[in-house]
Length: 258
Length: 288
Image 1 (cartoon, rainbow over the protein chains, first blue to last red):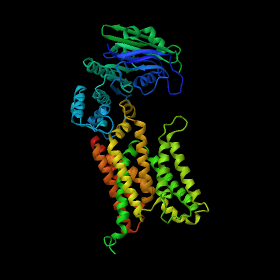
Image 2 (image 1 turned 90 degrees about the vertical axis):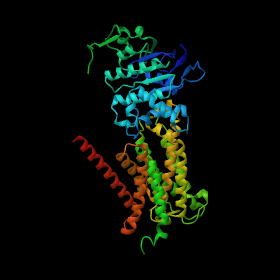
Image 3 (image 1 turned 90 degrees about the horizontal axis):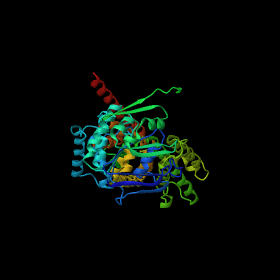
Image 4 (image 1 turned 60 degrees about the vertical axis):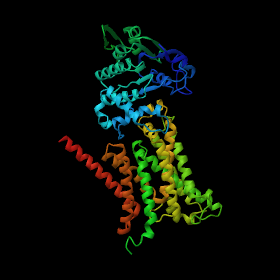
């Protein structure tokens, strides 16, 4: 499996700030499907921003074994795009071509063809010319996945794409991403609050907790366990696998005060 | 003398109103969607401060506001430089959670409005202050040939800059995070937008006045966004509404002998209200 991005003893954190976690050595390659879990404020976003090249490492090296950064597809947190803009679904998806086009150049016929193909792939082909803001929340998320795929990414990054969606919609979106990327030889990493999503869709997992100075990466089946999840979120959590299904319980917390 | 017979009197102001309104109507698209309406109002005041400072500096060189000034004392240049500096400062990312962007904008608005008065009250230029007030904030009635040229240059510069980078400006406004990941220089695009805005505001404020400038930056684009969901339609509509309010306002003020700037603003507000009502009716009809 060819590696796309490798962290060599990388300290992550905000510019001129302190390192949030102990130095990280980790890598992601084509075909990887990795879920990132951690409580709020655990450093998940900082980790992702460093991976995306939006934040420089405070120490250590971010290496691109191909000799260049991978082509990125990015699906932002669901509330990020501004829905006041008068854009059609196709116009939004065409933005995914920005990296290929570079500055100044406008999208041409081939870009429109790519965008339409991705919209077909996420099942929104018929809505290409509708206003983006008229779509339902789930459809908008799918359109944003199409936009990320229109970049023809080698690495697809989803930053809590479903933070305002119900678990069923989140599962639908992630299984769509899983099926769309399986045949494309793409590395996928997604941040989620749903343990069952990370366990159900991720082959790999990354657990992050700044307060405990904890970072661990490995196979989802080995990392997403009752014991580790309870430690990560600070409350009793039970994870059970039954065939393809992963069941997660959050036990009531006795000492919880409101 | 009929309106048409008097055209030698109104040709230039009318043309200035049309160019200024078109430029501001277009920029309004970004002003409204990026929610920086009050930043544009602050830039008007900051550019006014630039003009006042130009006169003040000119008084040392013995130049009166009514004479032709050398370029380094040109009020237009000072207006733009002040507005550009203001736009640059207001483009800086807020590092402190204690300074909200609005309060920084309010500071720029208040400080420059107050400083204009202080500078104009300086004994060096006090006797000119009355006329300077008009020169600072324009009156849309009398427009000099220079104002017209400056407006045309601002419009052409903005057209070129935005024509080249519209895709990037749109993407980074709509979804800055993803644009940054896609290699769009988001911070520089924000600066480009703010600088063209500063240019448009600085030049148009001197020709049309602060209130019409603020109105043309907010109301036509706001109305266009209520009328349509299509990008191109919104852009064209915003410019057309703006130009119509500018020219019609000028015509009506001539024929009805009412204040020009106020009529332009009232017309733009009327269009916005009509757009809002249409939207409301559409919604009710859909609900029924």
